[in-house]
Image (tube, rainbow, N blue to C red; front, top):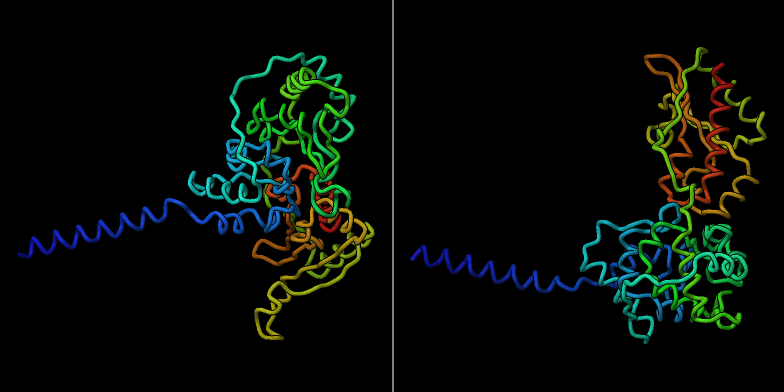
Length: 348
């Protein structure tokens, strides 16, 4: 009898688990989109930090395979990350949500490579496409964020030489995009420029030969910059402030490291943070990527340890890699150089 009861309970548990599994076959695409995509692409796909996804001409030519590959590969060196943690079912659920913004059926393309004249395609690209997409297909200046793109354009011209894009798009989708254009953006159908379907084949052949952006080659960086000082705490702090102001930065705040975490008067005076800023540089960097607000204004931590006095700050070049935005590289490289100069001068 006990054996029968145990068998019945086991069967019941299996049935419940199977039902729950079946109910989980179709994840909530809307919830997944809001969780993973809306912050950049807008809650309704209208764009923001990321490009708009609800443009009718985009959805008319974007295949499910292209969208799925984009989720998998992202856009290295740009704002769009890859999402390797999403399951196939979750990725498909997000795609169904995106599809819901259009009545157009999802196009299906073959994987056949088009046979065009790449040399002629290069000439056509230079004449008709490079003004927006860059002479090497590197995309428009800026990142496509709200601050950097022209107000009349809902999207910056994307980077066509990006490895994530090249891995995701088929020749047939490229050709369909060229022939259809993208209403609401500066991109018109190539037929409006007097070009033909054969010209589209030549353009696609050239696009497949675009060299990858060299700026995407990144090296691993230490997340912090640290230097030891041969001076005492007060002298090092005074040197730090002088080095900061000598480079036209304004000191905007000073505080102990544990300020706000301990009772007033109990702070450790030998662990100190100096905040400083160049407002012109801040505005310039924010126009490229608003996320720089996560590590600006600048700050240096001065602390006394068992080994002596040390200065520590973040490494902006390491953050540039984490932000996946090659347009931000030059600003982060500039900040890395300034941080190093300031710390060196304070400790010489």
